[in-house]
Figure 1 (cartoon, one colour):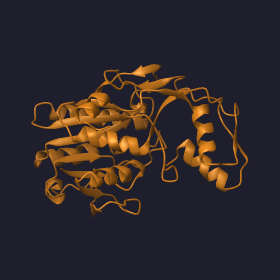
Figure 2 (tube, rainbow, N blue to C red; figure 1 turned 90 degrees about the vertical axis):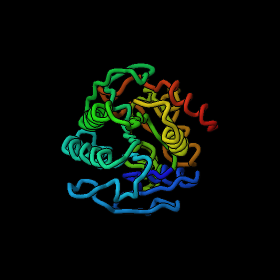
Figure 3 (cartoon, rainbow, N blue to C red; figure 1 turned 90 degrees about the horizontal axis):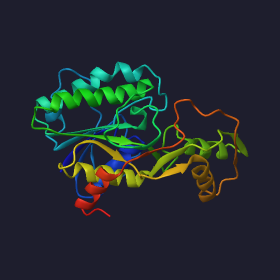
Length: 280
């Protein structure tokens, strides 16, 4: 399989490129730099928002596009997310119109908005940030555009990711590492009682690979653990595992109004994919 990965040098993208290449897939990595990619990939700095490029030909007629590229991810209400909706759709449309048969877009639990409990793929999204709106809107546009075409379309919903945290952008774990390196002994935190779905970054890359290696399961697919864990427990586990001399000062920050007390993903689809592809 030949896969194009946009946003290839990012936190998730770099791990996905390595995962695909290590499992004998050809990878076209698209980004502005490539220092986080260790795999044998073809690296391209092509601007994906041009109107006069046949991207299907530019990227050597790939079997699948995995569109991860997204700036300002930690800034959920950046207007960038709204302004680039038509640009991202035009890029994907360009690939499809010129011959692409398999498209994968990505979003997150922020597509859903406020939700309590286990999130099935069928849950009706009500995003509460520009980031969530942009991801859900792009999904709907591509879903409509591919409905009557011979194109496999999958939209992956991510939850919380951890691991290789120095590479992550704006996660609580990367911030803890930075504060510990700066000599801080404590840091202000919420009460830590909210429960989220956490998935280790290499496991996320493995799940994405499993999804794109098959075409039977389509539509929205949760990439997740299916297990709610209190952020307090995860933070303390992280500090202990990394041997950090720093402690959270609980209750100093209020819980964000759009953070559910407990949210996690349903795993029926991803478990079916992993089982059918014999990926353990």
